[in-house]
Length: 88
Image (tube, rainbow, N blue to C red; front, side, top):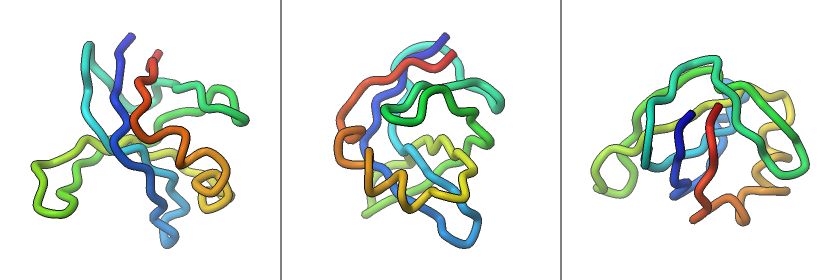
């Protein structure tokens, strides 16, 4: 189990990815682990990547492949920013 602080949420449209960007607070996260998202329940982390956003140090990016990634961002993106989530 791990905890993750969500700093930002964005979509990579060309890859149908909903991305949670932030920092790992505790534990280790690997591909295939699951995160519970409001309105969507448990979803699988498809990949873990890194991104440098606005000259900040790199963020860990948890990518979730979804055909409705843009809709997810619209529905839950704002409430996810600043939240701490559990990864199992």
